[in-house]
Structures are given as C-alpha cells and as structure tokens.
Image (cartoon, rainbow, N blue to C red; front, side):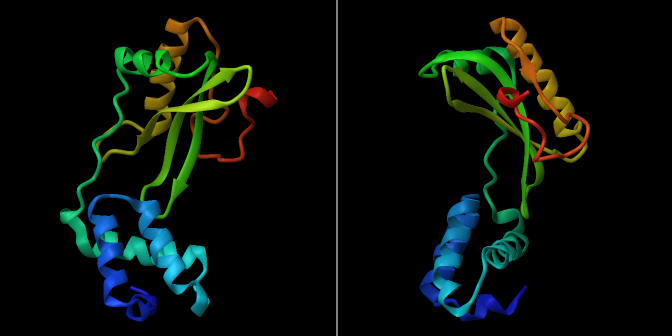
Length: 165
C-alpha cells in the first residue's frame, strides 16, 4: 500500500473502510481524495489507496449483487424511465477496483439516457462484452428499438456513441 494511508486521520480511515466494506467505491475515493488533496494527492493516487483497502479488507467487503440482466427485469427498468426509449446502448467503462465493465443504458428521446445495468467480469463467467451484448440486444428487440455496442469484443471507452453514429 502507498504511504498515503498513514497520512489519514483515524476517523477518515474508518470512514474510507466503512465505504469499502459497503462496496461504495466512489464515496471511498472521494473521502480519501478530499482529505489528502491538500497534501498533493491526485485522484489516481486516491483510487490506488482505495484499491489497496479493497485488497486489505478482502472477503469482508460486501459486494453488491450483480444487476439483473434477464429480459423481464430490464424491460421493467426501461418501462419505469421518464421518457421514450429510442435505443439501447452498451458502453465500456472501468476503474482500478473493477477493471473493465460494460454499462447498459437506455438512450431516451428526445435527449438523455438512463442506466439500466452494469455488467462486471465474473470469475469463470463469460466476458462482460458478450453478456452485455446478449442482454442489450434482447431488450432492444423486445422494445423494437436499435441496439448499439461499438466495441463488444474489446474494452474501448472512446468508441463512438449511438447518437454520434
């Protein structure tokens, strides 16, 4: 672990660990970064501090269950959105804890988008691109809208989006 952890006050350490134990990655990074930024800690280093805490706390971390990817669950989520679904899109994203993952979003008409599910790599499971493509395509087909995934086979968070194609 980097030496930054030693610079945190005990109260802040407890707060970071509480976020990690509840798998609240972004809140843990924000807490560490805000506390250590005056000392020169950058965002990337804050992510590394939190990643080290995930490793140190190991099996005690209460990872959130995976988002449901079955068609009825995705359809219900899409139906609850505040707009008309114009397309279903899959996008690569990643961080230092979860590595690369795919986010399924509903592209809304006339503008905007809404999160439907996040697909992480699961040990022994299929690649997240393959899983997300199957779920996204099934949802799009059932809604009668296009499905877009610019880079299903390889992580690419700069791939063209549906609205720009």
